[in-house]
Image (cartoon, rainbow, N blue to C red; front, side):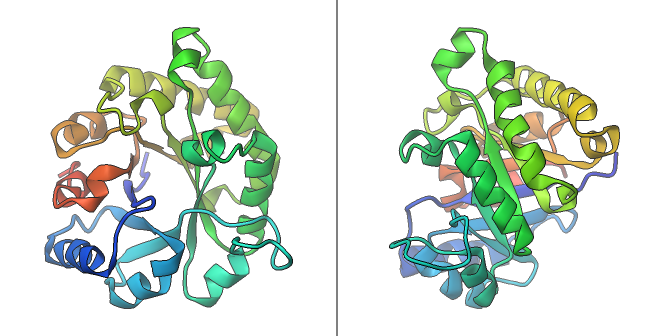
Length: 248
């Protein structure tokens, strides 16, 4: 095994400097499990500020970036810009980008490819809606979304974390049971073994995202194919420390 547990906090469009200072001070107090990689996804306008106050042991991620280095793309930011202000991670393909902003598999793949080429590390998100789950299409959707990423990632799997996020469990208070989550993670790893390589399948870290809280984190973390979490709302709260420490 040997996959390092990785916990991401996706702040989404939340926070001001006061709240950010509170969150960062809480993380500094910790104590945080040293065996866990911690990454916080910060609104673009605060990336440089958070980078300047957060301990070096915590990575800072952008929540999105565009697929080319520069140009006439009003409102977008490029991987080159992120690197320029010391940011080394980006979250791409989040369900909100897909559902609200209409990002298709192909666009997500183009963004992932360019981010990796630019030297960023990527948390690439996949997951099905409630309608798709109830129609028995979970694997079909998750495999389709991952297939789109294969050529984009190429041989750069060491710089990618996959985040499986059942859309029906994001911000709804519903969580996939540990059994449901483990089942999808295991199926995805088997699919990767066949379609990427057994080495990739064994090494890639797959996070679970979808209403993760301090109350359910330990049970989820105990599943053999769950290698971490991508946490939404709870990453803004003091309980984020307990989620980071879920494997202790």
